[in-house]
Length: 113
Length: 113
Image (tube, rainbow over all chains, first blue to last red; front, side, top):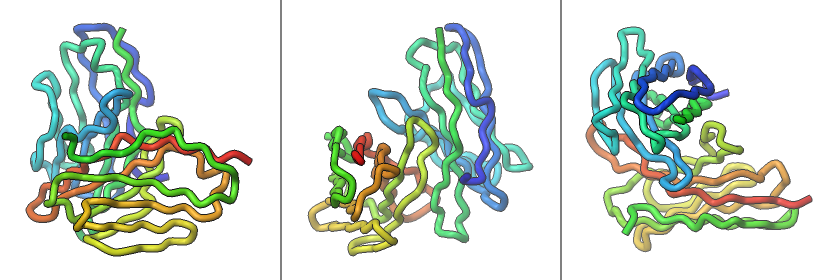
């Protein structure tokens, strides 16, 4: 158990809908990262937050947004969903004082029908 | 050319064999190199973490980094059926607060009893 929690585990929704994925980092970790894993693209970095502020952006679509709250949990919002958004979404957290090693949560499996 | 290339396999070996997994990369800014193990679409689990060139050993696992060749390896000695998983290499550049990881697509390993 990495200490990173994600909810829900599974999500099934329809095209055009909006969903919110939630992540709680390990105790003491200020950085949260979101990744998308699909069969054809592998693990792709989406976005990083550090102590509530956006720090780095990767291949994140404009339909996707994220935020990190004062209690350090993070939410990834996916809107106008398309079939191609079906994937595993992972959250990771890290602690700069511990070398910024990223520890991953169990993921949320999103299926868009 | 992708930033990180990894042979997807699959790789099948008998129990007790020495396994060699490799990645090549093109971005000379990468300074931190990691190997993650992922069981059947669960969250990636950190195995090894190496900074810059050199070797690092942890039990049955040895990580090697050759920055001059932009080539990293993971060796697994005395492989066990429980080592059957997908192995992902990951890398990040140093400096600033951009610690996003760039992953290879993963190599699927099966260790047969």
